[in-house]
Image 1 (tube, rainbow, N blue to C red):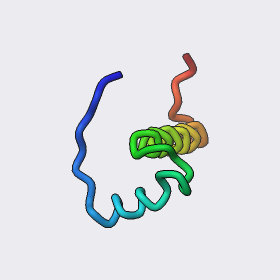
Image 2 (image 1 turned 90 degrees about the vertical axis):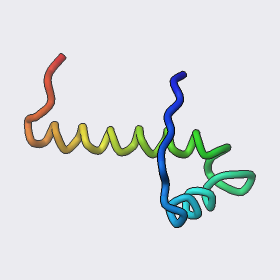
Image 3 (image 1 turned 120 degrees about the vertical axis):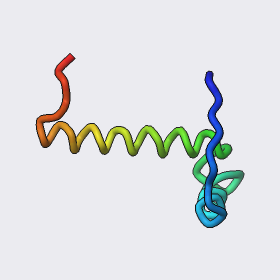
Length: 57
């Protein structure tokens, strides 16, 4: 799996960390970020579909 590096503002990282760990929804930051990326891309696909911008492959 490729690795990427991103700069994240401290306040976003703090919010993210509130959802990670034993009492959180995600096991680690990587899982949380992957889930967020997937959800965002799905939402963008839905918006594109409503506007007729998706290619039918």
